[in-house]
Image 1 (cartoon, one colour):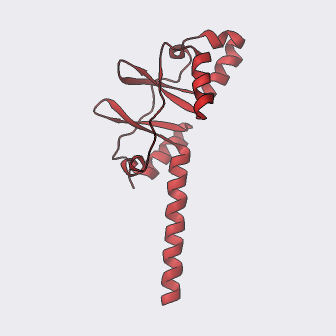
Image 2 (cartoon, helix red, strand yellow):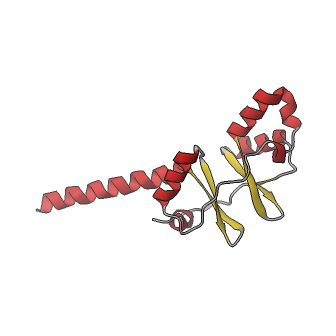
Image 3 (cartoon, rainbow, N blue to C red):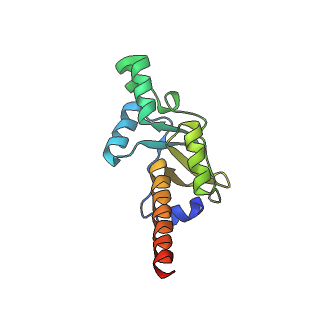
Length: 142
């Protein structure tokens, strides 16, 4: 299954933030939407990812002064991305190797979606359950 199939099931918009937002404002967005990361946009392009981890690292580094930083100074950049034809397991492997939990999906330089490691793990579990059910059906009819 490709990333495009995972995105097809989506019924919500991706929450993004501008690179000029403060860390405090970005944290507020994360909390309000109960999400773990924001694609950071500048001139219509993804320039980085701001995640809960970024907030924690900057707080450790700068104390409460980190809350006044611009997101561009606190985000992880450049963003690791995939395109819609990327296989789900390939994206999961990339996330595992890079120790990241979110991937913007880019087509022709524009973000068309955002997937989390949870999305990919859910797909993997569903696939394993489907294969197990097929195996049970086969065994019962053999």
